[in-house]
Image (cartoon, rainbow, N blue to C red; front, top):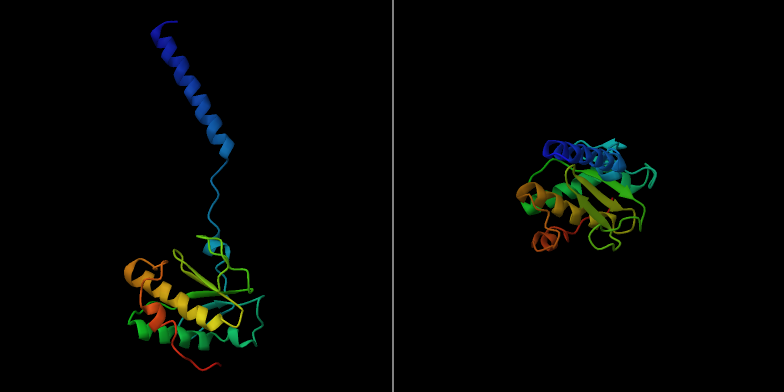
Length: 165
């Protein structure tokens, strides 16, 4: 086989293999909106917090009180000395939240880009919101949500006392 014909046949073979590889994977899947939780929300508070609570809790449930949740968030903001727009908060069923890092169940999770704060509907809802608000605020201030919990803000701001609604 002559050198030009040899290279042409190999180039054609490479193109065919490349086309076959691309066809096997199909098109790349688009990421699910808001980390698979959807970006829709049930209510927006006066300070801008968007809250998705249905179908996990009823509108009359205290955990669906966006004004109270905004007050908790603002308490953590004031304690931390970090200001950021109020987060999008999703309430999930107790036991449904699992850490993508270690597979262990969690009371709350924070995902960035886009920001989503997830909290469960257990008795720990309010504490989980404060804890995840620290992750959220650190991400906005430093570009790092501190997944290893090295910041003292987790203790000083996440443990602030509050009155139940």
